[in-house]
Image 1 (cartoon, rainbow, N blue to C red):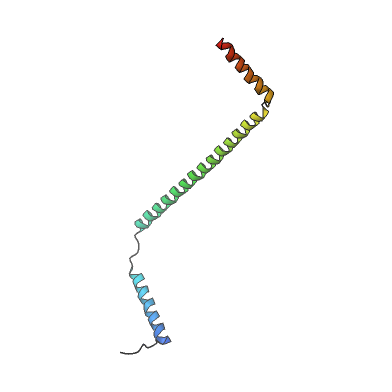
Image 2 (tube, helix red, strand yellow):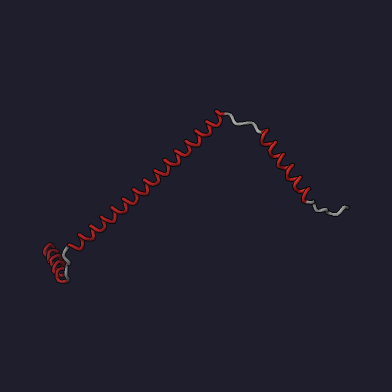
Length: 111
């Protein structure tokens, strides 16, 4: 069995040149695309881009709507809190008087 022989620089460059020539030959032999096919692919790409842009716009609109809804909910909560703060605070004496009135009314109904 023969030992491995390291290729020389000239052999490597010649091999690379052959590979390059083979690739160029293969590329030149490739048939050119039909103009109708190119136009069809371009139209399909534009349609995909338009659909993606529409989807993106819809997503952005949904996000903006969600932000607006959240802001409205926060404003409503703030308004409810302001109304609750505006109501007079009931003291223990007021609560006791209210309970006593209910008790008296209940007792009066029983008689």
